[in-house]
Length: 140
Image (cartoon, rainbow, N blue to C red):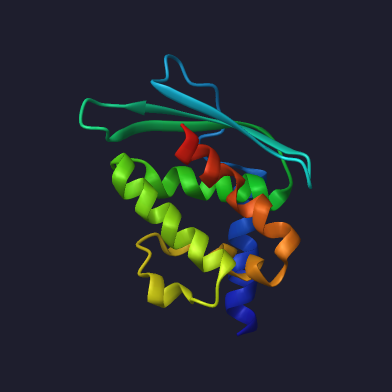
């Protein structure tokens, strides 16, 4: 069990130190801003959608704690190439994973790396950090 916890910690640290898709986007089709007053996290999520509402590009910028940045980075990888409807479904599953007793397996999430954030539910004050990027994505 310790090995898996260490792996999850490694994934979170890697994505917080070297976040994927952390950039300004040229000519986004959709953008939204999110703020977590409890922790001070502030993010902007931008999308480029095609005419079928497929996410062709996604980026985020902002400042936040390690969990916030790692979650945003993992989110961008999980939803890239998906439709908005598919992204919303992934959001719903992710949100359930970090806020309820439902475990990762019962959610059938396709993106295995997201499981690294499953332990956040043990720390209610950190759930907002983990979900900020996701809520901002839905607003975009």
